[in-house]
Amino acid sequence: MAALSTLANVAPAQILGVSSVLGVSYHLATRHLEPDYVLPQLFGLYGLVFAGITYVFSQPTGSLLDGLRKAGMAAAGFNTALAASIVVYRLFFHRLGGFKGPLPARATKFYFLMRIWKRCQAHVELQRLHAQFGDFVRIGESAVVR
Image (cartoon, rainbow, N blue to C red; front, side, top):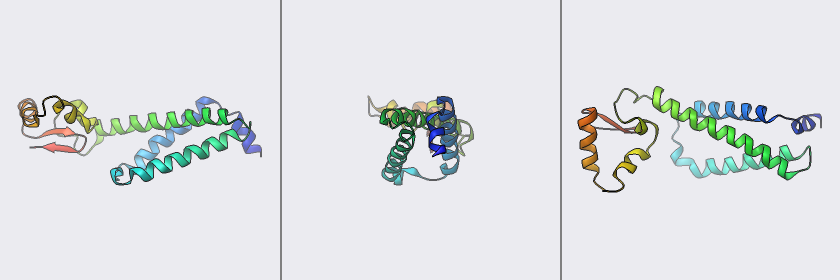
């Protein structure tokens, strides 16, 4: 019971700090996995963990609103740190980092899609990128075209 009373007095900075460390740790532990195949399971697990954290944080005070507020802070810290860790990894440490290409293309899959969205002429966009960056161009976080 002493642990629950301690949770009631946890400072927001502590919640954000711990959840941020967990977000970066999660990315480092799973960066070599392909999450596209298990997204529904990951979202389900995320929802269960959020519900569990909400329950744990609401127990000391008996206030569901307080539990949601603290769980929301934890989720915000986790998500922000995870996204920042992914972007930094893709920009500076990814195995395809040696290939030239537009900076936004190194961080996301959607750069090339957004560039060809209006005219639907991928070949024209690829020619422009090859003229600018050379024979091999990185057009996504894990996509290189020749």
